[in-house]
Image: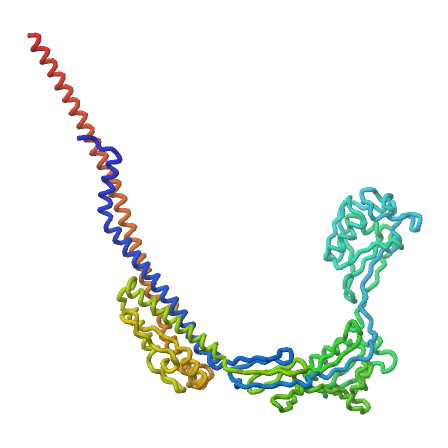
Length: 600
């Protein structure tokens, strides 16, 4: 017998293992079947969730009772409709727009603007303190004070200083101009310049007001000392000027409002019967304007920063403004009393009138306080004088689209169910029950407060195609539109009803009934589909463990077979060697015998 090669041994072992692998293959097939089922259940779940979303749209009033609105000239008038709007056409002729009552000061109040804090060199920074030495702000500090034109005892070296707690670095290669640039680009809130006429550095706060300051500190470079911005090394005291608040924010007695004719004084004034107190020592113009704007007087007061004029306007169009009882002279000084538009004319009183909108609608002249008003549930806004036609109609397309989407998704879901009943989930009892119940929910008569009891009455019919194909819907738009035009509310109630009159359409109708039923299957926590997938996943895990054990057994079996075949092959090889030795010995003995016989 010939000794087998390793290839022959491996081939033999593979055939044995392939035969013994059948239980493992069966387990793998069973696991794959579970995975296919889980995929099928997940796809059906997703499809029915999409169907539920379509049903949700059929529960909305706006789907069936919504209105469309159009304007022949949106520049003149625009409109928006609700489910409560009546279908109508409005011929609009805008003759006058509603306007707020408004009074503006005849001239500027003359209030001062905010001033800025300024800190500058206490004296000239040039060496002689006069015109004989010129400072060159472009020469580097490393060139020396003489080259720059500074006092010889003032030396600038590498280091840093701070302005308003912001650190500015200094190097030998810097110049006066580069340091000023660093200051200006920092967040110190300061603008730095060099005044060539006075040979001084000028630091100005970027924001005006009394609260602004310029603080210099931590100078390790000598720059502040050399620029004579500090009171050290013989420099005079700092030349600092405080900023001041704008007149709008300063106490009244610090402004021009308490000076001259009709000077503002302690007292009171009234706007629309709301009383406001004036204290010239405590109040600023802005604080009084804030009180006016936050009060119930119904007006807005503001100062125009450009013209310096104050405007008082009603917050609502058509509303008037009444001013009186000005013992403080506040209204007089602000030039709001006794203007040309004053309708009262009584001393100490003023009446400024807003205007109402005047709109001719279908031949009838209407007066409205505002430019937006409601007609038949439709909100109309007039924008300018002119003519426009507003049309309000039933929004059929929204309802048609929603029902068409529902029908299409229902048919898609039923097709998916039928496909799986023929294949992956063949004859599955749960799926068959689901299909039968879906047919019943959608095709049975339902009670509601409307006149329609079934989908067939509104153009949605049942189609039978035989076998598993039972249960498709057919949507006849013409029939549906006819039902919608004649009884839109009843069509809505067929899908979703509000029988307990709580304003929520969740008490009856096909959409509510079907969606509630499908919830039993599609709930993410304890729905039927979730339970199916979880159960199959657990079984798949069980198969994984068995497959692992079977694979371990086969791996060991293959290893043992290889060892046995190798041992057998070695034994056969040894036996063949012995046979060959015996054959050689026999041949040798035959030769000796023959030689012996010949010699005789």
